[in-house]
Amino acid sequence: MRRVMIGAIVALVLVSVGAWAQTTGTSAFGQLPPGEQKIARALFEAQTGPTRLTPDQIAEMKGREGWGRVFKQMKEQGLLTQKNLGQVVSNFERRHNEARGATTGRGRDEDASGAPASGNGMSRGAGHSGGKR
Image 1 (cartoon, rainbow, N blue to C red):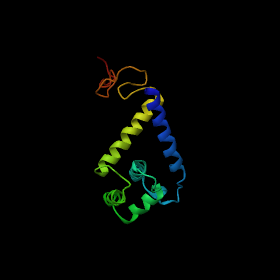
Image 2: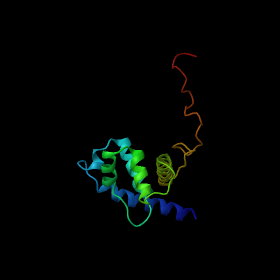
Image 3: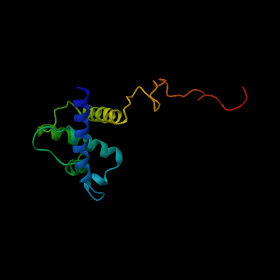
């Protein structure tokens, strides 16, 4: 079951990467700042059905409207099933974080050594000033 899940995630990433690779720096998508490219990618990946907009088409819609309006238009066209744009972006981030964990062999609760994460983000001695004790 786990192999099937990892295989599905890898396939999804590969399909998405192929579509992203079609965009160039001079495209509408390529002109977006990184944070907005992330939103466009999230909308692209969230689409359902046989007809899908390209990342460039989504970016062109953004050029005329805000992201909320782009989401609403895509939902009206039957391209999206999520309730709101926040849900689209959240699902995108979750999928990509899981995919990264699957490719590294580590989950979010482990550090690079495979040991459980400390929980506070601070390593041992992080608060130490370096002076004499």
